[in-house]
Image 1 (spheres, one colour):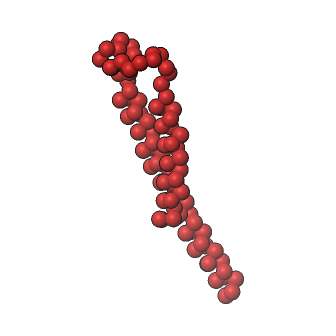
Image 2 (image 1 turned 180 degrees about the horizontal axis):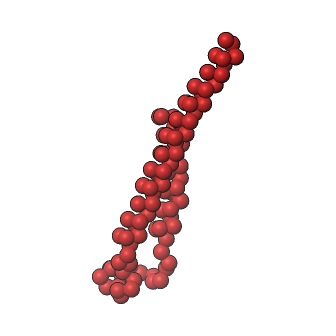
Image 3 (image 1 turned 45 degrees about the vertical axis):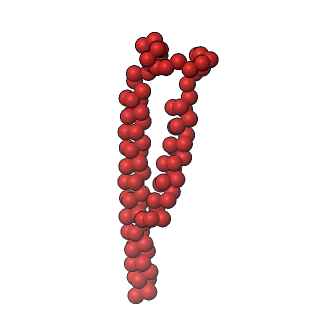
Length: 93
């Protein structure tokens, strides 16, 4: 199971590193710093917490799905190995 976790963690890191720059990009509209309380309401991004939460939910769901597939694949691999050993036993006997 530990050898299966390394590719999963690597895939999650790659996905996260691909998403973070996209989320962090902001169009340049001004040349100087303006505190958020001095910005007009349409520029204050009130939906940012919801967007971050949505990304977190999707990432957790994706991780759970990949983990589920990995576990099922491991089960199928063990079953295939058992069937192969049974087949070798029947050929010898």
